[in-house]
Length: 290
Length: 290
Image (tube, rainbow over all chains, first blue to last red):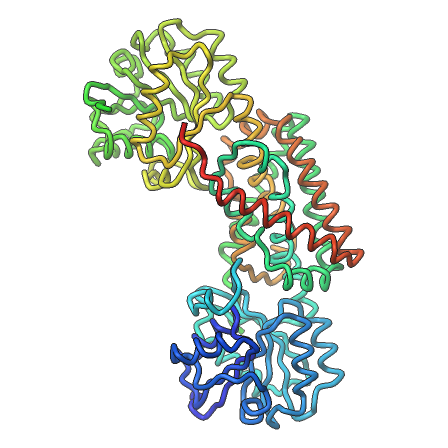
């Protein structure tokens, strides 16, 4: 598809927004790519590097001319930005976000969205334990999934445009699901592993004893150095789904502990076999391109 | 140090033994490097690749001439091998192992060890989720720690020889601790992350739903495809230590779950700050070279 007539704005040139801007600049070549941020330095850097055509701290001007807008802010900031700028968007614009929680956000947005704006929720399943434009790189999208959570009221043509755009940015898979399905899934595949890393690393042995770690420990705790502002919002916003998966995990742990203390080798073998099967399903499961 | 007069035998050319043999061949250049295995194919492959000088399925011959022996077998097999071959070792030989549990093993070995053999327990903190010679590579030792657990009765000169040998093989750090300290530590840094991976992946959502995973999930479950023969022995052999760390982890999880369900942002901030501090200690803590 040809996007050479598109004006595109990325709001928030942090890790995700900066990386998306790099991918758009490198692979899409739109008419204009603009950046909005409160951080003048990030805007200047992105312009100097030739990633964006122009940077703005005042949103009105670029939004009025933009056909496609990626809002790459934290959950609450995304909502605030949309509310504040609702009357700045170009009529007919496709607007999307990157927030890792969809149900409540999309419900709230629906309550004040202009009828001539098509908001389609999105979530690139990429990122790492760092934050800010200086860690941005379009390489973080290689092999990654991008989820979109359209509603029945979204324009089908706009959904297709967004899908093609995402795949052209270099994501491996594009997956469509409902906001509810999304939040239930990420509670398991993203929020739970972060909680595990936090709980694992919170052991005083780390201060007191001599510790040698292997790869299993380093991998399991990589994300323990968390971006607290973002994660407090995500975890508190998904408590109900998270509790459901946490309880399955806690129950598994308790069974394993009992088996080990009782010398129950048969249970462990059964556990290894089941875990191995689930791991293979996960490794084989190429997310369907929809 | 010069090891050109040393005959060395590696018993068991699996992932660890094969990788050690590669490191010895590449970096040490002893007088002879021999391999013992029941798998003739692994022996032939190691000889064809020029890694060992000769392979043996019968242990007596190489052991009688070896100054340094690495036993790279599973815990029970290590014990069986030592018992069966106790009278095959050369007088004065340094014998070491790679078992990830030390206290009970070393106690039992002490009960039947010949007085003219110096057994020094060892544990290279390296490995991955694969097994067998075909996955062996001395690259797995880059940046890795090697723990030894000598006893007061071990010959100090032999301990120094073994330490120098290990560092020359390319390990980043050599750490000395008691067998008890070792088992308490690995319960936390190795056995617990493996249990977590097993418990995390054992969720029926994996079969039933469409799953997109990010890096945090992939890292946390990498070791879920476990080598069951080895891990049943390790987990059951370290139940007491493992239960202590599991309980700290379980208690942390429960507190996090309550905070999330109660909307307790203050607790989450405190948790993030503590986890971040512990993670920094871990990242900074270069294991001391002793």
